[in-house]
Length: 128
Image 1: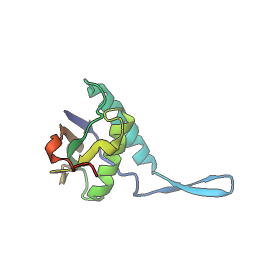
Image 2: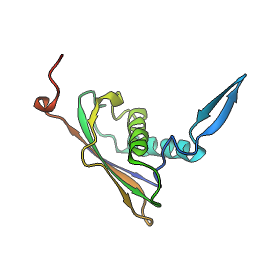
Image 3: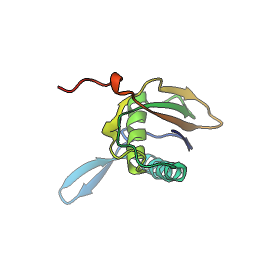
Image 4: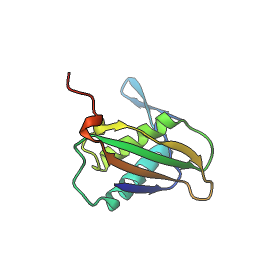
């Protein structure tokens, strides 16, 4: 399955902002990250054409950024959370591999191109 999320990709862990509830202070994602996640979920849901994934898959994400900032691990975490929120995957624990994922630069057309591929049973670890 292939998906495209248009717009400048954002991570959840950069530019965290404090949020106070009672006597406790929490760190929550930036407004830009929250906005990107909401947009990504809407776009993913519009492209959904099958039942939610509940089997092992490999994720290949080509992340085209407007600027060369952020790190791959944080982008992948945000993408996995968006896939789960959009109910593309029932749980992001089914994403067992990030083969071929790359950070790229495209200031004119920032986006995320995602390909999910079912993993063959022989490539999975044997049960313990």
